[in-house]
Structures are given as C-alpha cells and as structure tokens.
Length: 80
Image 1: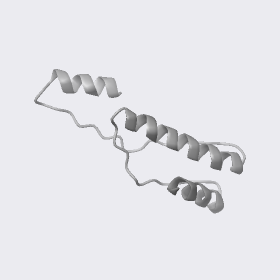
Image 2: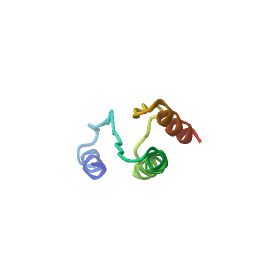
Image 3: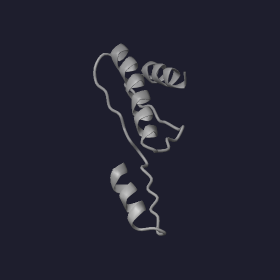
Image 4: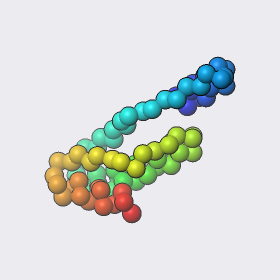
C-alpha cells in the first residue's frame, strides 16, 4: 500500500493524496498466557514496521478479549 500511495504522491503533484486506515485488527486464538505474550510482541513489531515505512500510528487502541483479565494483561503490557 505504501508504494502505491508514494507513487501517487510523486506522479500527481501538487494534488497530494492523504489516506487514513481506520482499523487494523489483530486476532489471536489459543491459551491466554500465550496470547498475552504474542499479542504484545506482534503489536510492537507491527508498529515498528509501519513506522519504518512512514506510517503514523495512533496511540488509541481497543482491546477485546475473552476475559477481562486477559484484556487487562494485554493493555498493561502494551503500555510498557
């Protein structure tokens, strides 16, 4: 997607395109302890890769989990 938008920006100046991606869900299934670890590691990796490509990442997130405890675990770890 980045390559397409970058080429559009270069080829059609001064009419520049701004694109916003509203949601990018991550879905995990499995034991809660593994999900808590992997969800955080994968979210951090995704942010790093997108930012390295020039994307801006919002600081707001919604966590939906099978239990309140799992949601709180993931939320706490993401804040660190």
